[in-house]
Image (cartoon, rainbow, N blue to C red):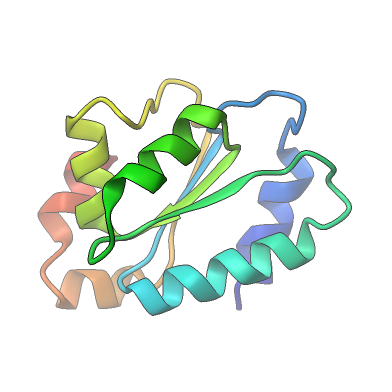
Length: 119
């Protein structure tokens, strides 16, 4: 139920600030895409809202460029998020909300250490 965390994120977001304020970790690319679609749909009245999806299996350059342009919400898989953090492409200084979507599944898939390092 994505709306359970998406609505509070959107309610507390400062859209005029073009910096990352919320991070949603998902165990798979498919869930990341689903959450991204839902977040954009629920946030359609938030003019200027930028949501970026950060997943492996795709070139990282477009994702890095999207972060550079400014996004308020990042949704992604632990591996790619950690990679972008380690490369300095993802600045976590302004993040005030973190969601672990399907945390049990991430742990079952072996992402426990990555999630701990991200947090």
